[in-house]
Image (cartoon, rainbow, N blue to C red; front, side, top):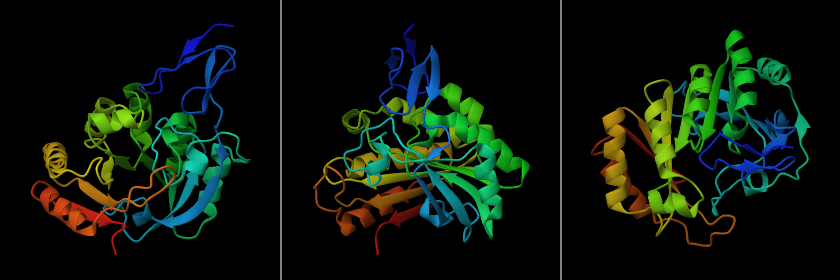
Length: 271
């Protein structure tokens, strides 16, 4: 059987027959690039829309949130590593029609948010479901690391009503996470003019917490749209990172810096 190259993201994994890629969710089956987690869910919950976080998109609403397994990054501080880093999980299968019907059954439900793991590695399931949700007057939300190819975005974004995209750090930090800085910047630049897009940066001490980096990123975002919502979120030790939690005073200084360029800046995980 022939080897294929996966074109969903920057990894461009070379997949021999029967083998999965870096994300643990795409596989070479008879020469076809197949999302093995299509409709395979590990998590379902009704969440406030603000938890995504989305502050400028139907505030006060609730949304059915769905997660699968797998991710194309390897963040050592991932709070959902039990599902993002593994593929030998118990799942329950829902077709796009079944997920849409479940969303319709919920009281005062805005739609479906694809979240918890990286939804874009199985973008086909998101797209198939999003089309049905739109036909039934419901919204589709993505919570994503944004590290995906332009060809996927071109197919998917016309059916996405809102996104929260991580902007994790600079080139070096993305390298540590097995990510690609240019890809995430290109994704943000593509999405902001096309759908409601909010950005989240988790501030990890000693990794992406410099005032210079926050100033650079917030200025760049303001050039795309000064009304872009930026969520500056406090890190806590998770998974393999034991670095102490981010200093709240630093968080507030970074917020002040971001507000030099952006109109909508919020702190997360800070009480």
